[in-house]
Length: 254
Image (cartoon, rainbow, N blue to C red):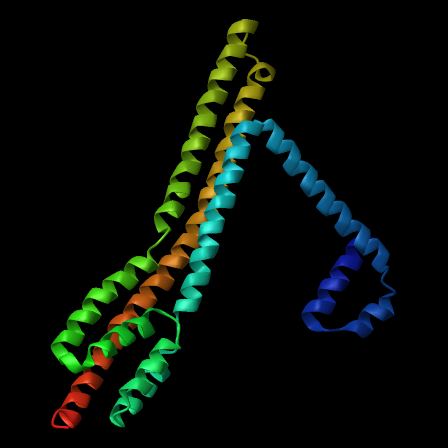
């Protein structure tokens, strides 16, 4: 009871900031640490036991799918985060620089800014002297290239999302076969005989579904991030074309 009160007291301190109450109750923080450490140790031990019971070969493959899938997810999350910029501020700088007639300054701004929007604008600026039509064709072509870069490695993530349940289903089938083999050898159908095969079937299924769910959640986040960036790229392209047209109207006779 004292340990339970100690754990609740710590959560109270974190959530509500009441250190004076904890001092008044004379909380034994050493006992709290012991409880937490014991729970963590018990959880890890349970995971190890289930890993072995679920067949080390199947569970190792599922673990590898999770690790590789999360590695690709992390790479995409980092890439999307770096690709997302404040397009309004960036395009405002480009517009102001073009209004002053400083094309090289606009190129330097685009070249020193990361992300697909800046890359598209830079490619358009390289063909600014060819007219708005050439700039528009460049934006469309290079926009497709940048969209392809955003979608890079997503197929690997979907592959691991698909493979994990398939491996779990394979483990389920093998577990059922093992259960029927045990029944055939024993000539009896008692729960004790079929428990081993059924446990293998259920553990591999649960592990596979957990892996697939984790990867699917991260994958959906990446898709939402990518769609947002693609939308910004389209808006930025329209705004930049307007800036190009204004530049040509203002300086076409110079």
